[in-house]
Length: 124
Image (tube, rainbow, N blue to C red):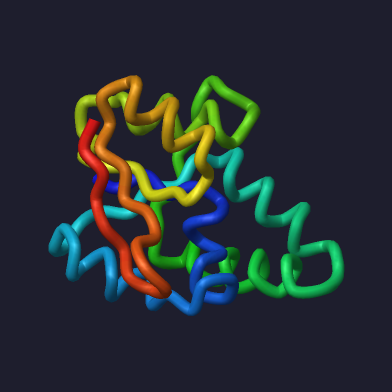
């Protein structure tokens, strides 16, 4: 199970990454899980204007390929960490440097951007 952060779902627009194809290349077939707090964050960002709103809107469309799970955390980064530390999670997907550091400190492997539009895994 891969836990995706808000910016992971915005990568197709912001970084020109074919997200699910890249994830399949890096780890093979997996279940994609998104915390409910990430869904809410995407909705708020999509209500804005400009490139960020467009990226968030595309991220909302990508939620169709993910399972949304409730968490005890209201803040998206905390919710990602909560799910990623669960027994069935194998990796988290994010480009957020502070969150990436928190995940690695918690022993969670992180998939993030490597190069211009490829993903790679950082082990804790």
